[in-house]
Length: 356
Length: 251
View (cartoon, rainbow over the protein chains, first blue to last red):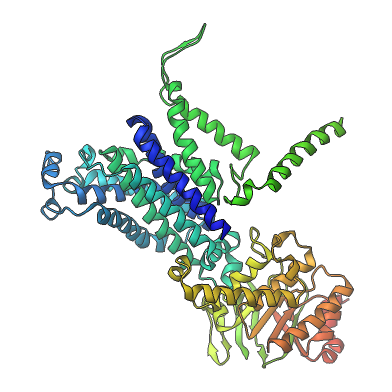
């Protein structure tokens, strides 16, 4: 019961912090804050595949694109659609559809999930790098289809004037739901079978786990979350076009998952916040810089080098990422673990001395 | 209980198992022995559905199970352990057993994720069953420890317990005594007989420790290069000329 109070207090505290941020932060900072929430959803969904089921998927941008387009097309007014589709008119059956945001969001996830379900049967028979290549190809196929379906998606021009529904409460609410879902799923007995598939497929199968079905289930769940995340992204930026959903977007999410810890929900949440913030904080690297002797004329993409170096360090020195597979718990703050941390630092010092 | 009818397995030009005919009755403990590479594990893999046999049929409780998927066969009541231990590395001892228990829980992903009351009840029962299994092999104290941190002998026992958690009627043990000292092997023999009686099992085991095989098995089959060269009680096998040749070589 005591734990429940702590949880309630924690949630209230975070809610209060969000309310304060929502009132006092400027639009730019608020946008970064909300982008973090969307990246939390995306990182969690990719972690479900990469970290918990052991499926190396690189197709996330594709499912996000599906979600973003579905939700945008379902919420834009007929007038906005007409304005957008000036090269070729929109298909008649899509023209007048306009549904409430919540349903559009669910439809976005459901459609991405449906595509995942249809494609899952052949693709999930593959393993490891073959699966990665197949899903990467799938994302590209989706992108090319969107680019060329002029009358449905407005092709390369993209969609502009998407209703700005992604407020702080919406995105953080969705992120909280996503995190709650992941915790509940992975703590359950079904969650254990998911991890069993990751640890040893043959043993899992021999213990009566329908490995293929588990893989397909998590693939569909993950795609649903990716679709919702993509939709929220569209409703935040208010414009989408196919070029947004290249492999680079998937790479950003992989970065978060690996830095945060493959197989840690807490890691994905922290990783998403840290990486999104850093992406903005490090933006000065892309600008022209003026040191005492050296002047640079602005190198777009230099900040990505920092992330690449971070990634290399993680892969070499701390493969488990920030959190490893450890999850948040209140026990982390108890005196015991602080003491344990203290002794580990202390003993390390001692060890060095002893070695000398 | 289990009957294989002229089962063969070919990998390209290599015949790993040829015309295998095994018949096991309820509550028997049967040994499957033979030199390395004789095709014993391949036979296990065919029975448990890892491989579909190239020829022949496999019947379990009178039903044809040839070529069925592994998890389906486990559901029918055949469980196994592995020669090279295959525990779930990143889980603790209890979780390893609980994964196997999921099969008989009768719950689904929605009930589990939403933690519905029915699911919570089943989960509690599953945990109690898993703990009682762990107690029966003296692993209950280490339930929360990492499975792969256990000493080798305990990992073997955990694998057997994990297989038992699927509530099988036929248990296949692939070299359960591998890496055990003579004392541990004798304990293992007693343990095998004990679980047979306690859980009403039929057991088919592969083993190299002759002491274990001769001590515990009622009948046995001897494979060499995939061919069944002898069958019968331990006394018959011990005197069989072909078996002696296969094991000791012939001048």
